Length: 451
Image 1: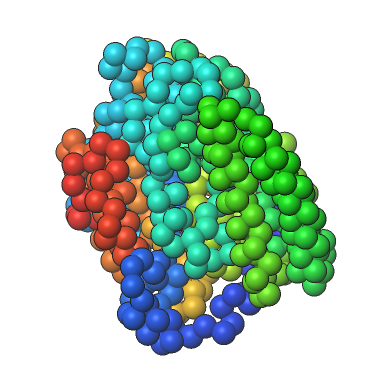
Image 2: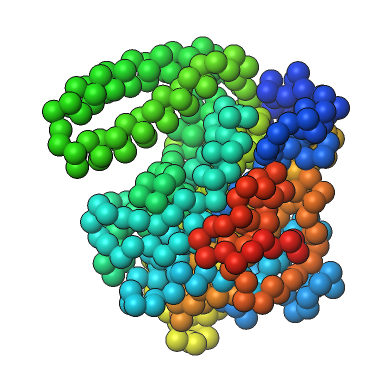
């Protein structure tokens, strides 16, 4: 179906079987009696967290609001957010010091994305000995992932190179991944909206997806059983070093196996009244819109409560003919104060924000189980690991926090937090989920409470 038909179907009718047996009162009772993180609001509705990443920094002259506090007005780049201005906050003064050069020299693009959700300094290597840190989304998934069919969802609109050497001696894994399951293991995101949809809801027409999904899970289980049998036999013939590598691989296989088991045990798989996307569209804006839609559907059906979306990899040098820009993004980001190039960067910044704004508006129209909107019951970060792409700076990062966190966040304001680690914000938001045990992440120095 065409994009407009897809959105029309989304707006008219959507099945939410994951919610049909849940009432706010019973949910709230469960939440109040639960031990540890629950990922629910005070009303018992699901509390979602998302991290959306864009590349190459911003034109700061058109990004930051003119005034702080609740009297702020959106600057030119952020004008598309006007309709949801009261449901977000602009955060200034947040830094990622471990993304700066230090003794490692060049490679700011690789460090920017590798550090964004981990706060850790990436090891400078183009080989297999990559190392960053566990990302905040995966800490959350470990704690609350069992509450949903999918512990987390990793998405991207980037279909480029993802292996080998990319940025000044850094492995491509750093630039093409923002989610890290372990310091040595990034979680590969999916770029095809059709694959995402079928993973969430199954393939085929409306009414056939649950059965098709169960068939696919059975096939996957058969393949995994074969792989595990072969791997265990190989382990017995391996030396210590190879066994260690094999054990890391088997751990990933077991994680997949557990996801299959969890999916098989869930008989109430949602079947949205929405046509399956055809695949990756040619238009980049269409691609972004579809991936935002997939994340929105996953949240609305409570298929997951934590997601990441990497819109493009750091250093991306594509052009944007849709908005009349023929030069590459990365090339323009090194503008050297050239007014014409800076103007084009501002247009690119707004181009990305337009799709994010539409995503927030759709979430704001989705009624949640407690009568509030899905946006109200969300904490969604939109940002970049670069502030100024021309200087490769990693302080005062361009960060937007959308959603009310179920009423726990202070929205409709611009706050300058003044040289505070970005990781302090992540710890503050994790506490909204009830994750009291997590008190350190990367270079954090404390818990940011003024959010």
